[in-house]
Length: 64
Image 1 (tube, one colour):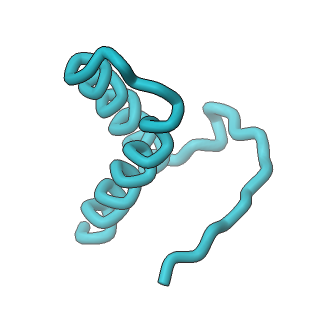
Image 2 (cartoon, helix red, strand yellow):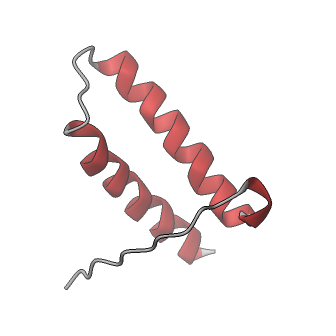
Image 3 (cartoon, helix red, strand yellow):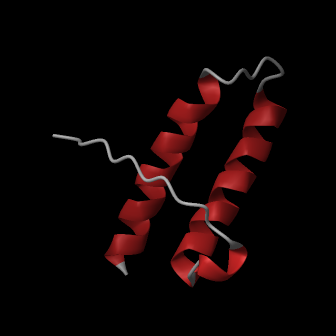
């Protein structure tokens, strides 16, 4: 069962640890790939894809 967590906090660059930076970079590259794959990206598509990208990235990080 998945739970939703609402975290309201401003994150600055210095707050990010290496793991967070890797996730951030992975998200940026995923969004760039999405832009190349399809030209009709809307905000409706992005959250789900980002969520899926985060989940798979976290799973990979947890393996190490």
